Image 1 (tube, helix red, strand yellow):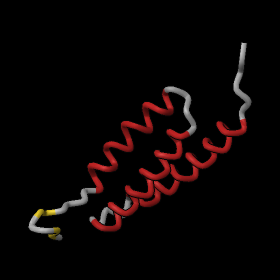
Image 2: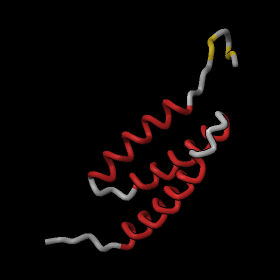
Image 3: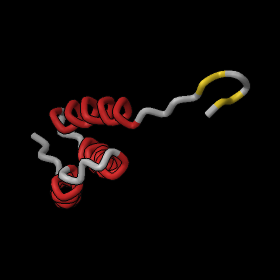
Image 4: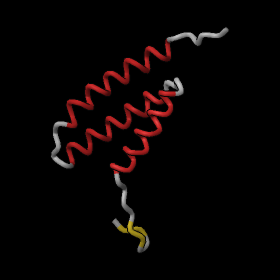
Length: 83
């Protein structure tokens, strides 16, 4: 793809790398949004699996999507513990 002479490359593997790091940091800091980013990352990993014919990525990431959705719901429903 070319845009005004500048090569535009959209690399999903780099996006996935950034999402993995960001979601891990957010989950470690007890932010439910980390699970949301992890879910988005799993969708991207499924796309990568389809595009590269590495179909083993798909069931593993579908499982992770389900797990992330359950964690988002659980974390959002928890009342914050205040001292």
